[in-house]
Length: 440
Image (cartoon, rainbow, N blue to C red; front, top):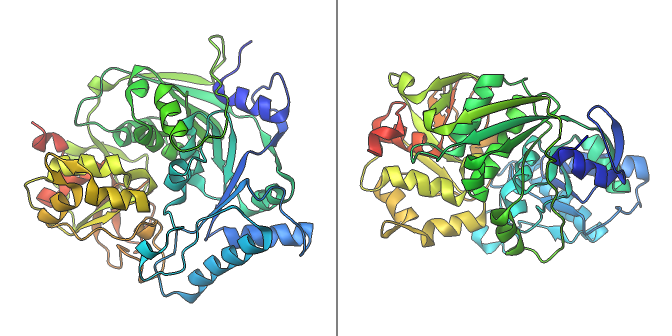
């Protein structure tokens, strides 16, 4: 019997020829990522269990990325970054993307931005490898044909000391998407459609494998959006088979060798779902759950107070290009926040052009708020002085990945998750708006 892509990766990492869903196996870890929120706790576990003077298993296989609560005066948040810095110096961690000047992020050559996109842009996401991170959206990296998933501080502390972890092999749910993507649909619509179909617990501790001709047509950034939100359905990981698009992206960013693996033709799946994307429409996830799906056109009476375009899920360069398609030559009617995921994306806003204008010229010409420093910002609420944080019970259309109560600050705020196209169209009208109204 054949194996799925995820099973093959885990078998190799376990030194086995075959693994089956439900088995508990020890795997060798290729990379561990932690950030400023969970990093100090992970370091605390490591030192408690392995000793105050212990050394990490491999200083070149740990990536430390401050990104969540960065541009704030909150002393506790700032102390978290200090702890990462002290640990990186003590252990000789090669990949620590530090920030020392919070008042001018551009003066920090090492600072990158949101961990999930930074990992990809810095060449840390490679086919066939095993990546663990102390963040639930670590599954973002499954877009590169690797096993990537989020873990807690205890597991991360154990990996720091040993380079290994005991995990259960997940069963694989396959989602086959076929057809040419209409210009009004984005990967965010696809994943919200799927989560709406199976529910936030529909893929609990299972792999979500995305396949089909539609997936093969997607860019790496769009594939990242799909895999990023596998966790919103309870998934252990999301994954896309690597191909020429993957290899071109990865080889442009790292010279490290990797070996891709693929699902066998006779692999067994927990379930199979098929979609014809030409039949799908732009959707939103209504408060307060990613599976509370509705068609965008069904929500046209919902008045919007603000629009937020950013995060690992919706703040990549292509996300902003799609928003610019809608906003060019028009004016927004509500405050529209722009938060690039990384320094590279921020730079792209001022250099990349759409229809003769830079993205920043389009956004500022449309009346959007000036692009913010790259970070998680309001996606995780954060201290009161966090950019874009909701401090009032407003209605927000957001390209982020979660809309739980309090996720972006104020607990009674209403967050509607949407694609960058739907978010931009909604900014123009002040109501939730189907982007097809501006793409005719």
